[in-house]
Length: 408
Image (cartoon, rainbow, N blue to C red; front, side, top):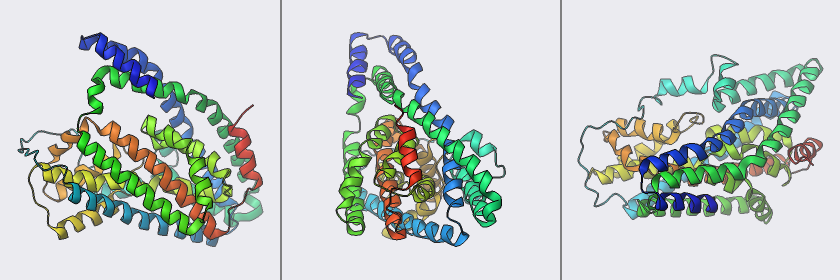
């Protein structure tokens, strides 16, 4: 990442022509699209196979409901903490004060109606078992996988052959994942080089106050989540954080939580966490436990109101928080998910949608922090649920997963 920033900065400073910057970014950016495309290629099969097998091995639907209930308890609690912390900090720092923007009626280009209640339901619940796999819509894949896994668990021996076949597919996909991960450093270098070559090092300083305050908020959120994790897991939380060090920079550098998903499965197996738990809770977390994204939603929404000198009373802010609590669930797979949720929220509370233009230029850099935070939140969630279920064990499936993702 650092080398990419250096090379991009050198190109931007040595060639004043914007066309040259764009040409360089186009050439070097060709390679940067390969890695995320390959990751997206395996996400659907990986989520389905690991989740369906994990649930199928739980033997009864009661176990699925119990684990799912504990996971949702953590997700909802973490969501409230994330949203509340974002609201408190944006009111404390007042990053939008002094901007004094005037509503000009300019479109932000973001579909503010993409996450209505009807749209939310349609996005989460699939009308096809195949289309979500094609489109990499994780919430829909999760819903189908849960139904499929519960059905396999209820059928016992009759579903054994099907589960064994799907488990074989999961092992193959995990091995493929190990190969794809070899390209991660090159992908990060190319992505950063292209971005900096086009925009210059100055983009790292733009909105420094807003970015700095938001990233400070993310650090506060990490501390809170880790503290709660320590209260439940004890000193073992230090080992968990050390394991997360590998997927964390991957998510940060690529600004994609999905890029870190396969590596998180491998690292959680080393904690150790039973694959039955990690294969079930982690995909759920990717749909319903995006802590960094939720904090950003409250922070950015109130920032826009401040920038346009629109006062928001405390009851209005609380109503906004509760609205975001619902609309931020199941956004995984929606293009520019956080911006879509923010756009929908702005419309509901009479705030100018064009305010998104204030943060659009630096959204990628903010997304880096959000994605990395999602890795921490989902890792802790999986470990805590495993602790509650007594599944902090290194089982045979976990050993196989580690071996397959680390090919000789």
